[in-house]
Length: 120
Image (cartoon, rainbow, N blue to C red; front, side, top):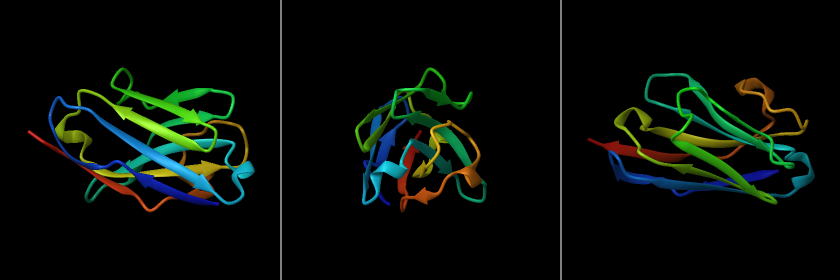
């Protein structure tokens, strides 16, 4: 499975951004697709995840500002009202079992990451 993330960039605080993650290869192994982020000097943390059937799970820190969606083998992360603390490299990930899980170690496949920078 290959995951290709895109859509990052520089955005002003209060603005919006949409990230995309396209899966290719053995896409039957992407039962769950998720987004994580890693700020400089910090651990990679869970943002949101979605199953093929539409089950969704958000981190408390982003609830109400972020929407995850999925169309077949592409996952999207719509970020609204962004703030400087949202600045990070955003990674998409996928796991084989159809159970949403926020733990980094549970995901089998990772994309290359896309930088999101929010200016104040």
